[in-house]
Image 1 (cartoon, rainbow, N blue to C red):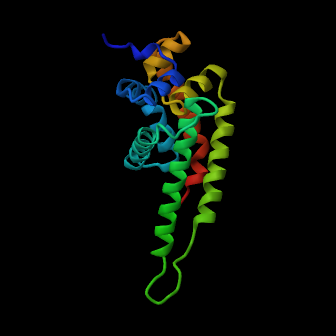
Image 2 (tube, helix red, strand yellow):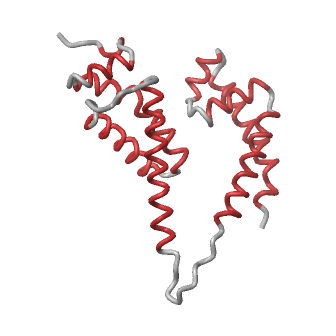
Length: 187
């Protein structure tokens, strides 16, 4: 008789993982993989790196299942772990890049990271202000689509509107953003 792991809480599943239950591990993997991938991808901006980060997390979870003592919830543990893995990956990339940023003559290459960070922060802040100015329903649809990565069908079901209405709201939001962001991209 096989267990229906979908009815178990995450914490119960982790207890089963600590008792060497691969079915419980598979359920945790299926339940959280995509959310962890999205979280890693937002920070790394690279599909392969995000997949590697999530794979490293689950590999570590299985290998260290006897040593891990979760004080909050498994979900909090997983998302905190993915943040640390991503930070280590970013640090490693920065370290490798900085060691290769010295040219043959010994002069460092130009570093534009501060300028780029300021521009990114300004752009992000401006986008957030524009999104806040959208009509409430349009803003909600846009946030569900772009920030929570929901499909048009999921948004339509969640908000009780048609998929066409979802498309119209997203088109309206993107049009407003495009028209108000032109000055960020002048030549």
